[in-house]
Length: 147
Image (cartoon, rainbow, N blue to C red; front, top):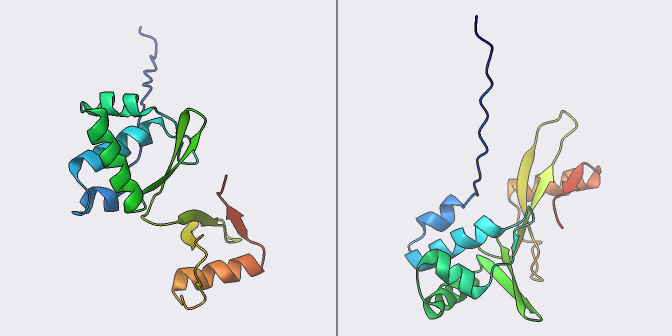
């Protein structure tokens, strides 16, 4: 009698870290600025919207948007580079200079850890994640998700 009908939906979404949303250090403007930049970000966390676009999407002035971005930089939720007339914002999934490292054990499970990319001495860190990362790196089982 009737034909099977397949309904598909195209969802557009972005991810914002819980830690960023839960912090009391950042203002609501800073959190919203991160959300706007996350919406424009590529898979490596690089985002290219102009200051005018960020302010317009937030519904605030450029001055307040600029203050919000500075707050995100100060707390290390993002860094930014100026290239010519463009800004490149690099969003972080945690505050600080961390990059995500995916560890793929031979049994196929995925485990994710943070790798510190600062120039500070990290040899004192004895957390389980670091030990696992070092071991997996030794046996060649680390796939780095770094652009």
